[in-house]
Image 1 (cartoon, rainbow, N blue to C red):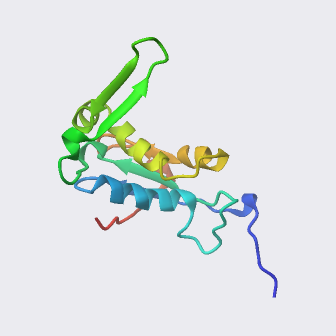
Image 2 (image 1 turned 60 degrees about the horizontal axis):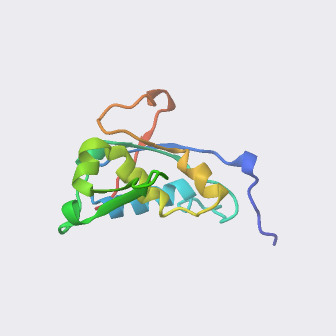
Image 3 (image 1 turned 90 degrees about the vertical axis):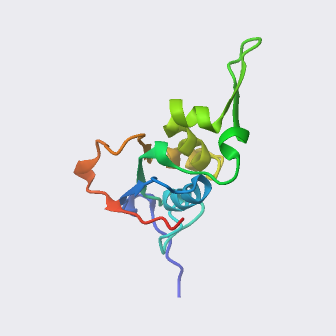
Amino acid sequence: MKTYRIKPYEVKRDWYIVDATGKTLGRLATQIAKILMGKHKVYWSPDIDVGDFVIVVNAEKISVTGKKMDKKLYRWHSGYPGGFKERPLRWMLQHNPEKVIKLAVKRMLPKNKLGHRMMKRLKVYAGPNHPHQAQQPKPLEINA
């Protein structure tokens, strides 16, 4: 019996919507990364991009455990002298909540071309509205 390998043009991509209200950041990010990679599908393969689209709404309402709101720091550098910046999670959630979830998921995906392609299928919105009603996304329950 031969092993069947799916071709990239045969992949059927579904759309899922996740409500992040009250969900723990890390547990939410792992489930989203699993869907983006396609590990929930029968024909998953590490070298073929078979994942689905994921829409995350209410990104500003995620929760974290412990003292991470003040102790977890996001660091970056602008490339200019003195351009080092660091902000706590509380500041990031107030000013750019979409970036918090995107960074958490991005760091769980492969660090190659496939990972970049997977990130393009992640849509994150701070509020409850999104412009993807035409794709008829299915609700995805994340057990937190």
